[in-house]
Length: 169
Image 1 (cartoon, rainbow, N blue to C red):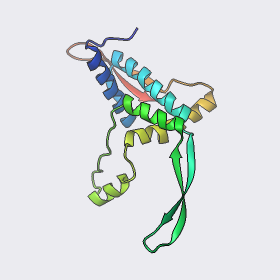
Image 2 (cartoon, helix red, strand yellow; image 1 turned 90 degrees about the horizontal axis):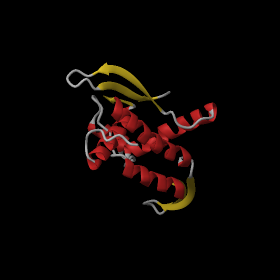
Image 3 (cartoon, one colour; image 1 turned 120 degrees about the vertical axis):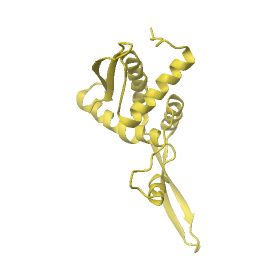
């Protein structure tokens, strides 16, 4: 049975969605133990979906005509049907967080770096986490177990058990 976390259903879903997005973006977050356990299960489903579909790509040859009229052939790599469907499902399960400009990064450099990336969190899931955990699955022969929870002790005020949830290496 799912935990209620002291809020109604829509607030609970929003809370888990926000914390899952933060965990996927930053790699670790600090929260209460009950929330961490719910987020771990939620994130495991997202990563498993990405692992099962991240290799489904289709290469397509496209003829491109430049400004001088010269025709060249380009190879485009697109998502296959399964990967596209998984990408759309994941987009409904997380809030897409946007890239942040670096401390000493100029605005043109930031725009150049982020020009091709429309959904950074989704790209991170498919480009970083899926291959990493797929090789882990191959080596250890097990799926799941993508996160770990460290207990920090009771929180001052309400004595709720505070934990850090992070991805395993």
